[in-house]
Image 1 (cartoon, rainbow, N blue to C red):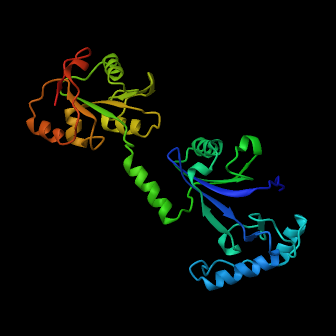
Image 2 (image 1 turned 60 degrees about the horizontal axis):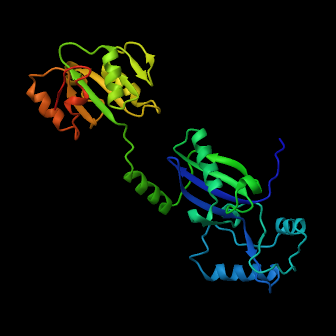
Image 3 (image 1 turned 135 degrees about the vertical axis):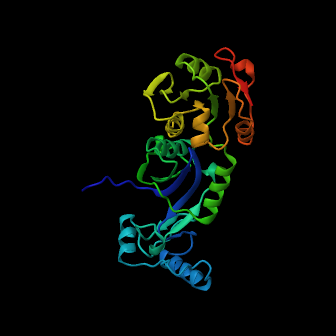
Length: 305
């Protein structure tokens, strides 16, 4: 199989929940010119520094050297080991960027990345429906837009490797986010609610999804017929990524048999006044917000807890 070659630097952009969490530049083994020393001399200086600094010289990392592969790369660039590269010009001596081949990984700040490149990584993860993804982008300069300079995504990793610091930053951010779906629970005792009444109540409470034991609806479209019980119907809605906010109508007996579909509903209200005080006290431990009567009386008489 033949693939198009693209010249550039390899970057790993890690996306988490639609945002850029981390970005690293992956450089192959090589040297950076100072305008004075030859490539061979620069290699000797770096090897000497690495050997004298055990903290920088990880056991699995190969020291930079001039071998057959390095000589071939230099020839392809019109250079030799006796060439003197300009100051701050990086000269690669390996094709691979992994640590075992002497590669280096450098973390970049978000502001060093062009917004177009950030959007490209986020959109790639979204299209593949990945909450977390490692996007490997090859581009000449990540501070420039791929739309102007060109670029190539060579790999998308669904389980990207990350260092402990990157994982900690990502977990801290996720812990601050409210990832729950608003869930409004209406409980009936004697009779249920008509579908039109449920639909009107869902619209009034800004719910795009609603259910009872008779059917499941999303965005005014019925997606399922009768379910065994409202508990199962609610769990089916919770698994839909387009369920922005849910209204669930359940019978008291279902609550007693199966429990609540979610640990803390956004609100809980009764269609008819219940005599089961023990149930009411139990439910009060699982909600913070109570819908006012005025929001519900257009559909049916309810009693909020």
